[in-house]
Length: 202
Image 1 (cartoon, rainbow, N blue to C red):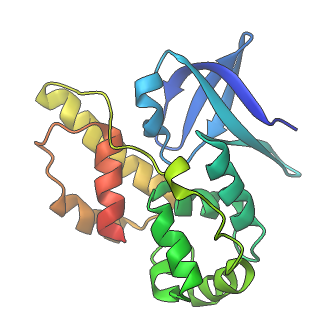
Image 2 (image 1 turned 135 degrees about the horizontal axis):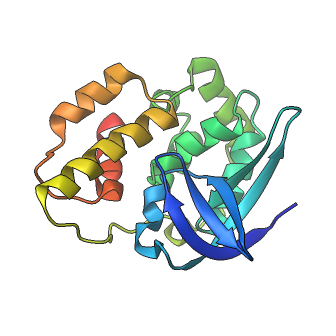
């Protein structure tokens, strides 16, 4: 079982990164991998959760220990698997997530892909009162990211963001609605587009 891997971020894709350590490239599934854009081709520490199945061994990665801990809380809820937990964590409004759980706000929780009313109620039942000690400031992401220039890069970042939303489990219908509200000419990074899209989806 891995606790964390310290390596070089070699590739960033819509649903995962490739982290190279000691000559080995690890495929690491992440919630919004583009948060690591500023560490592209640089050394990074990624906290790990290893999911062993009959047909696969998967690695899930997190930029902070706090986010990994929240992930572990979520996957202990009946009906929430690792990929569903990643989709929930991709929206970095973790303060809003915790507040929704504490206030029995299942409507907020059902906005996440794969979370219906029954699962939302289960999240509240299992986690209410158990997240109050989390310091959300420690694992809420910043909005800082690398600047990109040129319409070609901007369009590529926009397309990557849409692919990332689909990888998280959002429907094409929801993505289409958000796509119309995002400014493709704004020259944002992929990470920024994803953050803005997730805010609109919530």
